[in-house]
Image (cartoon, rainbow, N blue to C red):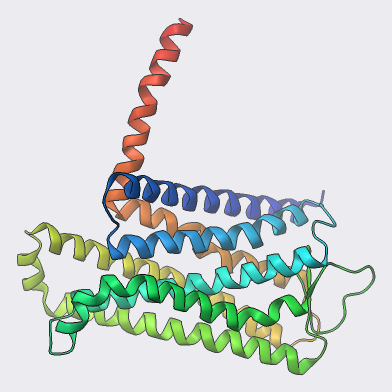
Length: 313
């Protein structure tokens, strides 16, 4: 196997393995929290849904991509490609939308109470599930064209205006469809990213402006949790914006050429999936509930390991 292909395959394998493991751990930790506690806090519900969206993205994009890099062919037929590409588009869209939702929710939570916010803040927990439903419906509608352009790879040369994903082809058939799809996806992404950057900037402004007040409030457990949550949100937003910028720089370049090099397409897949792979580890390191559940599970496994070792002796 060529050295370049080996490096690419190992990179995708590590990214996919780390991402699936991290998001699965977050989901299992929250499943245990749901089992032991009456209900999840709104922020925890959003983080849990973000982990699910990222896991969905990794399973539908990075797993088949990794298998293709290592030489596996004919993974999916036409219906399989349509389902996988549609699910991937929805998962990718939900990742940006839920990160934006998390940022806006936290900005409203820590904002000073005013005439309007005094009514909105108590209603925030009841708005989480309807917002999830709205985001799912919105992105399912925006991505509805994806199955019509998706198909299994064909023998021979790749036609113009076709995204060669390796395991599937996305054939837009003409330049107009190619550009309209790219613009629609980019406008949606840039709108949500602009909103999340604006709300995160507002969070930073509040934390800076009311620094003395925050220090006083930190003595209470609730305010300390809000401060930690705000820092987690800002970290996730910065992480997303960095990889979003790289992803869209490559995407804009891809819109300007008729035939996209497989190397360029692989680079975009790798960078666009970095957020889904890395974000669960930021959630684990910054969320006390998730960290506590993982530590508890590790402590429960330790006695069984010690007993096994003593019995072997």
